[in-house]
Image (cartoon, rainbow, N blue to C red; front, side, top):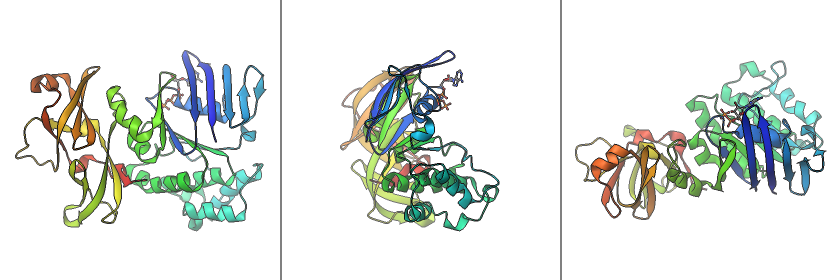
Length: 361
Ligand SMILES: Nc1ncnc2c1ncn2[C@@H]1O[C@H](COP(=O)(O)OP(=O)(O)OP(=O)(O)O)[C@@H](O)[C@H]1O
């Protein structure tokens, strides 16, 4: 499946000019506040009409201003999950789940309904009303309600931003399951880099109403480091869990760059993981570190030193793992950093969020 978007739109002083193609998997729309992410998915959903342009899902055009073609939202077969669940407070979970199905042209059948309920572990909540659900449970039900309509595409607009860190971590595996099992494309708006790093198979970055970059998650989030600080991008390290130290609350893993010390996870020894290390969390040292509490110490050699506005982005080859580090210009000047220089990259185990360490796909 392919969603092809080529639109121009105006909202007050804001102009959106976007042209992109999205294939299957979970595509994150990522960018600063006010960049136009919600506007873009509202255009896809049919909640707004572009001033000019075309949006097509495979061979079906949903909007084509040249041909005066407009398919209303309910005929696009899109499931929509918002920041706050927007469940009907007076209906039970089951009634909420079945509500959308009544208005859908192709709701799921009984077997698929059961699969959705199992996939999201909401079977035990069926008789409750939304007021008796936690924030994370509400979002799982909202996701279930969207899936039960039998959508051909799912739009999720910052679905986790109202949840605290613990609830967020708890719901991420469910979104991964939907991504991997529901086999429909998902367009997912977020400005939380860890969420994008973990969930997205592809990323579209949006900046001031324009598509800035499109690419596979690992490649794109790593290369964003060259684009500047505003996005707070980071590095993916691929590693294998080698041990746990429950008394210290640590999980230990090996990657090409060296040994990683992470907050304790429940991933078994031997599990292949990806850890997302934000550029801003890394300290660069030109000498072997002594007397520091920092557990993660990866040796490497500087590859590039590049200006990024008021800061400097340094890329370091750590035995084949390429890591980007963000420094102030003053630090870079004081250390006289240059290509080929041996350095050490340091970061604390606790600076890597639990949700930033996940199973490799
Ligand atoms: N109805 C409207 N009338 C005029 N301007 C609007 C309207 N709705 C949104 N805007 C403006 O359009 C721009 C894009 O908004 P949009 O909600 O798409 O951004 P966003 O990237 O989703 O931001 P956030 O991450 O904060 O949700 C913003 O500058 C916003 O102020």
